[in-house]
Image 1 (tube, rainbow, N blue to C red):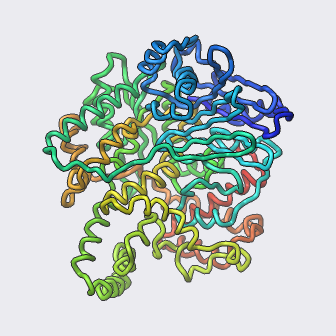
Image 2 (cartoon, helix red, strand yellow):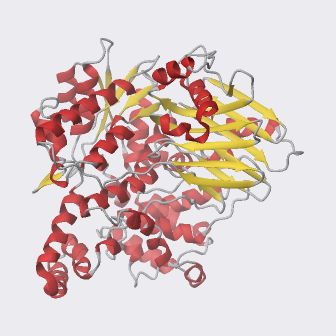
Image 3 (cartoon, one colour):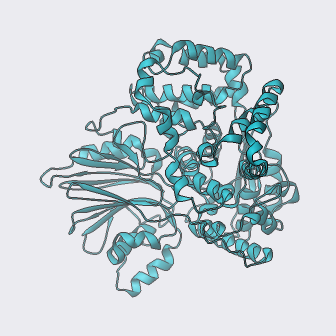
Length: 632
C-alpha cells in the first residue's frame, strides 16, 4: 500500500521540477512512511511513498522493466500476482524483484492497456511508456483505491490524494457551486467530479491514456446482473459462495507483515475471521470500537463473541465526544472529499489502535452491496410491489400516507408517501435525495439569491441517471445493487475506508469486493438475496456454519456513532461557532436566517443531524483546501 503522484507536461521540451515532485509526495507521506522514490525525465515526473507490505527488501518504486523503457508507480495489492509472474516468465520476461508491482509492468509490455483485465486486486497506478510517450493510468474495478487527476491546459497531474495535486501552485483552487449542491443532495459527491474545477476522480473500472496533449478516459469493466442463473439449487449456490469467499480470503491474507481484522460484530466481518482462522497458524488480532451511549447499539459484545470463537487476540476502544470534535478538522483534511460519514471518525481511532500492532487490516466492507444486506433493498422492493398492486389507486394511497405521517409525526410514512406517485428511478438515485431531506425540499430557502442562480437542483439529481440507464434491463433489486455499487460504495464507503486507515499508515483489505465474488453474486437470483423479509438469504445460509448464531441472526446495526446527541449537546456551542461565524457566512452560499433556523430546530430536537454535520464539513473543507488552514 502506497501513495503515488506525478505530472506530465504536454509539451516535450518542458521539464517537470524534481522539487515539485518531492513536495507532492511529501503531502501524502502518511500513505507510505517507509520509503520514497522519484523518476524525473523531461516532461514526466513520477513520485512514490511506500508502506512496505510485500517484498520488504525489494519493491522500491518507481520501478521499470528490463531496459528501463516502461516505468510505474503503483498503489494497492495484486492478489493473483504470483500466478501472473510465472505466466510472464514463461513468455520470456525477466524479473528483478518479488513484488506485485513489477508484474504490472511486464503485463503492460505483453498486453498494453488490456493488462488491467488480468489483475485481481485493488489498485491505482500510472505507467510512463517512453517509446510511445504515453501516460497510462488505471483504477481498480470498484474503487477500493483512490486516484485523482487534474486536467490543465498544458499539463496533467495525478495523485492517490488530492493533496498531492494541490501541492502544485500551477493547480488553481476554484470551487464549483454545482458540486456543492451535489454534495448537499446526496451527503457525498457521486461521479467523477470533485468540488474543485478540473480536478477529477478517475472512476472505478476506468483507465486513462494521455498522449500528445490529448486525454482519453475509458471504462474497462462493469457489473452485469442480466444473466442471473436460475438453474441451480440453493445448496449449489451456497457451496459456490463458500468456495469463492474462502479463496478470496486466502488471497487477501498474502502479506509479509502481520494482519489484523476489523470486527463489527456482524455477519460479514465475522465470516472473514472464521475463514482466516483456518488459513494460518500465526496469531490473528482483532479490533473493535464501541459506545455506551443511550440508544446506540454497542458492537463490542458481539465482536468479543467472534474473537473468542476463533481465537484472536482482541482489542477494544471507545471514543469520546471530545475526541470526535477534536478530530473533525483532520477528518476533513484526510477525507478531502466532503462526506457525511461520522463512523469514519470511529474508523480512524480504531485503525490508530490497530496500527500499534499491524500494517494490514481486513474488513467485511461490501458484503451488503454484493448480497442485498440493507433494509433499504427489501423495503423498496416490497414497496414497489405494493404500488403495482394498488395500480390507479396508488395516488390516493400516497395522500393518505402523507396525512397519517403528519398526524403521527412518522418519518417513515413521510418518506414513502411522495414515492407512491413517483417512478422508481426518480427517487432511488440516492437514498438521501428524497423530498424529506431538508436540502432537497423546494421550500428549504437555503441558498442565497446569487447561489440559487448558479446551481440547478435537477442537474444534481440527474448525475446518477446514467447508472439507472445502464441498469434498465435489470430487475428492481438488481437496479438498486448496481446503482449503489457504482456510487455510494466507492464515493462514500470506500473513500472513508481508504482515507481513514491510510491516515494511520494502515492498509485495509476487503475480500467481499473481490471482482470474481461480485460477478458471482450478480448472477444470483433475487430470491437468493432478498426472500420475504430476509436479507442476504444465500449468504446467511452459506455462512451459517461459519458464524455464531447470536451474530448470524442479529439485526444489522451498521457502524453506530452517537453523533446526533453529541451535535445537540456536547458540541452545541462548537457547531454554532462554526456555522454562524462571519467567515462562514462570507462564502455567500446560504441565507443566514435559514442556517440559524436549522440550528435552532436541530437543538430543539428536530432530526437535522445529517444536515448540520454536512454544513460543518463543508465549511471545514473550505477552511482547509481554499483558505489553506493546515490541519496535518
